[in-house]
Amino acid sequence: MKDVRMKVVGIQKTDDSEGEKIELFTEGIFYKKNGTYCYEYEDTKLADEGGGKTKLVLEGKVLTMEKSGSLSASNMTFEKGKKHKSAYLTPYGQLNLEVLTTKFQSEVDDEGKGNIDLEYTLNLSGGEKTINNLHIEIN
Image 1 (tube, rainbow, N blue to C red):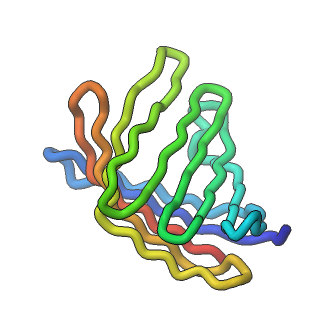
Image 2 (image 1 turned 120 degrees about the vertical axis):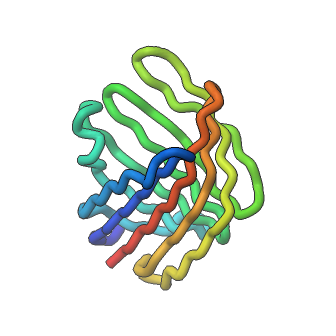
């Protein structure tokens, strides 16, 4: 396991909004497991939800993001051109999600350092749709 510094920038837009930007600077750990690249870090931006942990698993051109906190949990898979179903668990119940990744770029070296860039559409079970960008820098 190696210590890493991470910058995570997320932008979420709806049809009638310019977008909401969230930026997180954090430290985490990196390790390889069975040919996959794994990252784990504390997600302080979930502070209003009691804080939480995020685990990223990068396997080729597929990224899985698992978030868990005291008040919520989610597991999303990003793979360009494919739809993946997911669930977002809250104290008020489960929200079903559908994730369609339209852009996936990863440039990560053997030390786990580099960049991951995603663009994806998130469809919520209630019909709301958001367009999202996610940029992750690992040093």
